Image 1 (cartoon, rainbow, N blue to C red):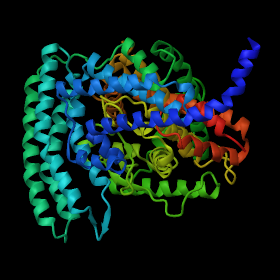
Image 2 (cartoon, rainbow, N blue to C red):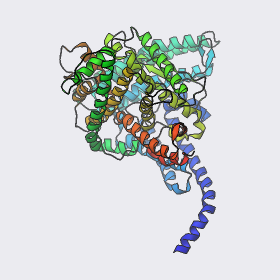
Image 3 (tube, rainbow, N blue to C red):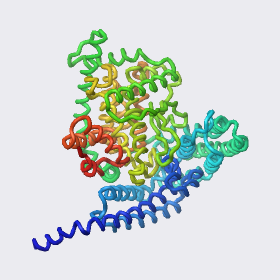
Length: 638
């Protein structure tokens, strides 16, 4: 036996190198078919990623919207089964480490889509997806247009593509309406909050956008071009038809869904949640375990926050007691003190975010944290009204990675002059969110990934279901949101020229509050989706734990700061209720990164090792870190 095994071992070096290129080539053929098929059938995801830069034939998809008909979904499922069978026939041991990881990711994605469409039939109730997809498809395409100078963007063909996509809206909404009606008949309907906020409010905002805003943007961005008049005329015509379709759709929602009882219908259930943890996020711990362990983590972070608040109080001469009975109230007093330095308008608030982002970049350059190009830019813009129900505070959407044009957008949601909301965006609070959405968070992460896009397999960019909504898989969030929360923490660590890190003591309080929020999300998300916590109890808990404001959010006569806190909490819990498992990816992803960093540091210590780790991590794309830990560590070399 030893002699036979020895012969096999001796032969392996001769067989493996020959087998690996052949197996890799076979994998790439399968992957190419899968990715092209996926992007063709998910045209808005294709636009988001710039799919036409990868496959020129996908340029037509930029003028289309997804076919949500049951027949199209069944046809799609048949293709995915074929692809899955081909992938399963590949021996992973004969693949290179990179494609071994890619194959695993593709199989998880396919399992999710088959489960979502065939077993759950989620298209019965995907109201927010239907309402948001058309706008996002247009907005992301506009975001990817090339700057032609003098305030003009895009070529004639690109604007014709926009016209085509807008023209597809009426038929798209008709299919959405049929699917939702089938859901009503099956007793599978969206939660009443989604009906009100997405179905009614966002539908009307969409109508306004297509009727007025989009033609205005077209006129502004094509001004002086020979095709401008014709394109704007067509945008007005197709936009008017889209607006009528959205108002008709809103009427259907009002008649068929808003009249249903106001019962909670958002919870996905423990079995479904655990399936998503295992398949989508690659998390072995079940929801019950995450829920149970989360509270101790919340308490520990809260202790650290109160200690940081005491430092700020003493620095600013705020005389408050810090014994066990009073320290929570004293911490709230510190937040109230810091909220006095707030922007007086939304314009000033956006400027503060932009200026703070630049300060973060300067700090990283001075301390040689990353190799930052001189032409690095970050755009901070106001969130469009259509996305207000989805974006609470701020968000980031990258430039299409498969294209060479476009710019990422750091969205900041306006307050419309609400003083209490402006106070929530006080000067000390800005840095943490700017680090998360801007630098070194999402903006930097996606710019680095885009720089190395040729080395990142296409499958690692995909967002099955949709980019961001209740239909999403959220596979990408473990890396993307985990990195962004890690980025917040990274700026608090000692640096070469700054032993205390980037943040001032005041900013450090808000960085810890941001961590506290993400820790609490694990408790809340697992709680509300498995029946351990009600929606209203989650809102109360958020306000009490994160904002240090005691009492319930229900009832009349709330103080202004409590009312503002409760409104923020309600918007947050609404998002969690729509997007099961997304909220937990921040904390779980960050912890996975820190654990991986510790292992990498043992192999290559010091600042050079840290920079090496960061680059290698970002070069992996947006799949869960658990998929690529072994390959990353193998590449950690001095």
